[in-house]
Amino acid sequence: MSPAVTPVGVIVLGASGYVGGELLRWIAGHPAMELLGAISKSHSGSPIIAAFPHLALAFPEDQFRSPEEIPALLRRGEGTFARIACLSAAPHTASAPQIAALLEEAEAAGIEIPVVDLSADFRHADPDTFERIYGVSHPTPDLLPTFRSSLPEFTAGAATASRIGHPGCFATAAALAAAPLCRTGRVSREIHIAAITGSTGSGGKPKPTTHHPQRHANLYTYKALSHRHTPEMEDMLTPPGGLRPRVRFVPHSGPFARGIHATVFATPASPMTGDELGALYQDFYAAAPLVRVSESPRLKEAVGSATAIVGARTDGETVVAFSVIDNLGKGAASGGVQWMNRVLDLPDDAGLTTPPPGWL
Image 1: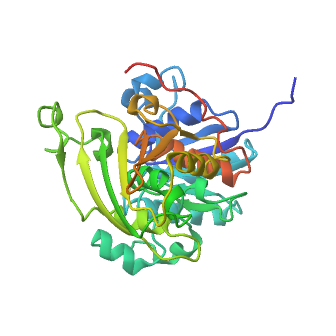
Image 2: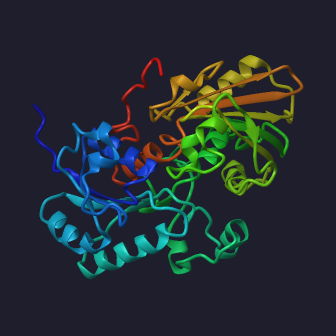
């Protein structure tokens, strides 16, 4: 029997939203992580199971904590855990200030805390780029140079930073589908992408676009050719030392709760057979334990899991690539846990191999 390992204590910021609930679910089953504090200003003092009854077996007595309790949590965690880490599921523009406050408290206590942020706050290194995309000034521009943003699959070896901004869910799905083509220079710079997402991507507060009578048995586009995840896609698809691709992206709202199905259209830079295309994808993701290559990715094979499923086809003149992910999983919470695994020098798939349900 292997000796017991002292776990990492994890503080989850913005823990009461959909992504926060998914973070708690993945932490509950992680062999090297344990919840130190689920932070939520709006739910502080209330039981976690009041917001997430499905987590009753994992957190039967735990409560949400207020941000003011973070210093006490740090003191308790320092004497209990091997180290302390932070995963933030707080909303855009609210996450960065909360992270800044946490890091300030940690520095005062002499504690170094790795951070993975799931909001948009640290996906762009330039504050002017952030302001152009999101229409507001960045709340903590001094922190931007300390973060990096990408997917683990595009970063070989150990993490080179301890602060990560996880890409958006659409950007994750699209980049995973297109990366073997774009990052190896096998297609032209003009990339066309269509993707369909579930209603959980819009968060827990009802709005016209997520209200059940409007979403059920319906399908429609929104923000066509102007979605804010497009620059992230272009960032991640740029070949090392190569030209930045031009992505034309059309998102769709689908009549399901979870998941994203993305389709990429591209023109080969030179003729490529189907066998060559399949080998390209197999080779590109050979060292990626949470990406599976399939001829026909299906949404239900990914929903509820931490896995992305990708594939591609060609007729000799056009290449189409596909991916399916869980927008709350690989597109957010489990993707964040995967990054934290990398930062903590754990296997990418530690705690993330639970298979999805076969039928939803």
